[in-house]
Length: 192
Image (cartoon, rainbow, N blue to C red; front, top):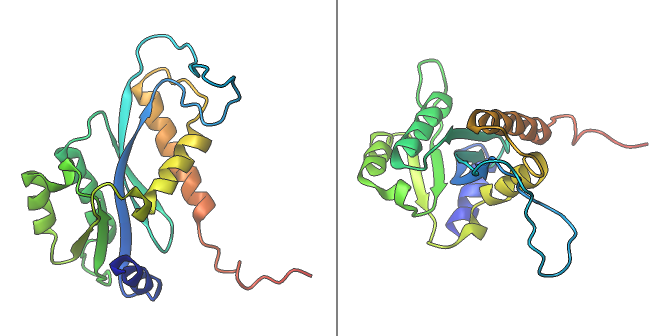
């Protein structure tokens, strides 16, 4: 119920509502949709060992824009680096109108560590955290975006190294953000 209230506040322009979470991508292919016999092992042979890139992100509820930070680790320091991104985009700055920001997060270990709690406390004058119950990904709107990113932009590809994968992630996020941009004229158009 609290999330529904927060969504209405964001849609009215009273707050900025962000859904935060992390995911990961692999240098070896992610198979989104493929036909195979029942029980078949769906693996694509790829040279070397798969390496991971952690993706920490926030999704703006109203604009549907995705903000990401990539890293080779998924630690509290990476979460704080993502919070610093949010500082630049939404934090108080001279000449920019201040609007309260609500960040919806799960109770994952990197969000509740001492370092993360201290970083959140330092931002409490403009950033409020709404904690989701444990094991409730269906309440976090960013989960659908992670699926979209992996299934449509990173699937069925092998990346030569972590740098190539990170570049592909950022390119895919730009493409997703372009797709999701709200067209102010879209509601005004009438088909004849």
